[in-house]
Amino acid sequence: MVLLQLDPFLNELTSMFEHSTTKRSVWVTLKRSSLKSKVQRNKITTAGEAIDYRCLIRATDGKKTISASVGPKDHQRFQASYATILKAHMTALKKRGRKDKKKAAEGVKKPDDPKKIKTSV
Image (cartoon, rainbow, N blue to C red; front, side, top):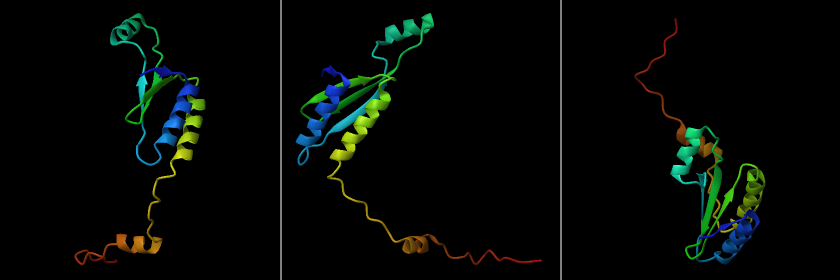
């Protein structure tokens, strides 16, 4: 697994989605990471320096795995590009069946409890 730059990662992700339209799935995971070992992080926290956290993104289709690291400065641009790719390749999803509003409202109503009697003074 190689850590790619953002643009090559998005290109590879697009090709994964295109190749897996019928048979395979693509899994994408996002994780907070500092890309440093625990020993280095402990030294930084004891020295009082700020830890620069990044977002580690991994994508796999079962055969091929790719990954990238996104910093806080590039996050907005990456999210916009990633959302565009997801919207373009989610064509195989089924639409959710919706109930009529009247039927749903009638099904939620409960009959009045006969034990509770309202009295007015």
